Image (tube, rainbow, N blue to C red):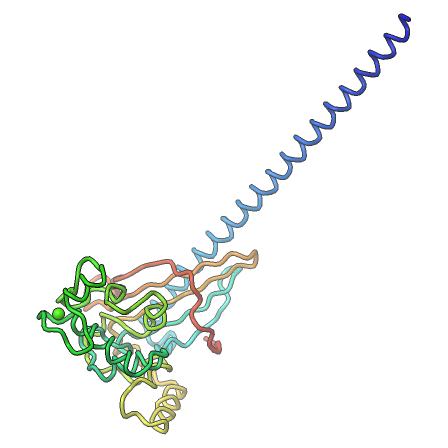
Length: 290
Ligand SMILES: [Ca+2]
C-alpha cells in the first residue's frame, strides 16, 4: 500500500517535471525568437543608417560636381549616374529647376501641355489650368473652368483660393480638382524655383519636352542629340534638385532629395532650400556611367 502511494507520487512528480521542462523549453524558444527578431530589426536599422549616410555622401558628390565643372560634366536633366560608394551603391540624378514648369510664371499652354502628357483629357486639363490660375491670381473673378472661394466652399473645402503665388509645389494639392494621384504625376515636372516663364530646353526632363507647345519631334530629337554630345552646363545652373538613392550590400535603402541653390559668391557655394527623405522610386530610366 505504502509502496504503491510512493510510486504514484513519484509518477506525479515525473509528470510535473516534464511539464516544467516543456514550459521552460517554450519560454526558451520564445526568447530565442525575440532575440532573432530584435537582431534582425537592429541589422535593418543599421543597414538603413548606412544607406542614409551614403545618400548624403551622394549629395555632397553632386555638389562637388556642380561647384567645379572640371570634376565632371553632370547632365542636369535627371539622367541617372550610378557609382559604388563605401560598401554600397548610389544613383544620383540632378535636375535643373530651370528645366521645369514654374507654377507661378509658366504660360498657360505649357501648363496645359504638362497636364495632358500626364494623361489628363484636354477639356479637363483646360479646367484644371483655370483652377490653378484662379488659385494663384490675386482677384476673385472666376475663369470659365476655374474655382474661386465660392467653389471651394461649395465643395466643402476650407481655405478657398490662395489668391497669391505658390510658395511650394505641394500647394497644388489645395487646388480644387487636383488629387494626390494627379499631384504625384505632375510633381516631378513643376517648381516654384525657376522664376522664369520659359523652360530651359537643354535641361528639361525628357518627358516634359512633349508638353512644350509647337516643338516638333525633329526639334526634340535634335535637343536630345545635343545633350548626348555632352555639353557642360553647370556654369549656368541656379537651383537644382539632387535625388540620391543609396543601397547597401546588406539590403539597406535610403532616398534623399535636396533642392540646392548656387550662392552668389561669399562663403557658402550652395544653400539648401529643401531636404527630405523620399519613399517612392522615380520612374526607372536607363542608367549612364558617371
Ligand atoms: Ca484668384
